[in-house]
Image: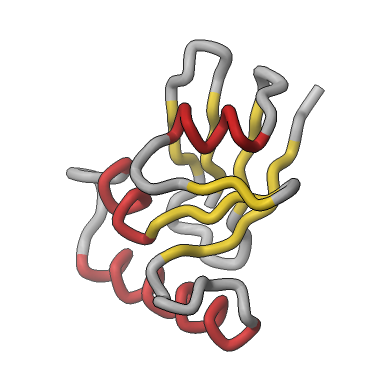
Length: 101
């Protein structure tokens, strides 16, 4: 799953059915703080990483997901939790930011 943010602040979730990859692509060169503010939905900056709310991902994909997707996403979230890639409350996933050329 790739969350793409462009210079206009538009958010697009691509490959949303790929549950073995989760990252943000920032084509605008935003700082993580600016990315968090632009993405909203409870996104928080943490150094070079972002914490993205599970509910934010569901919101961005509203109308495009089904029960099968929900099972896959829940499985991805459970795996992330087992690796310590979620916050203590279990509401946010930690993700890295890539800056493609």
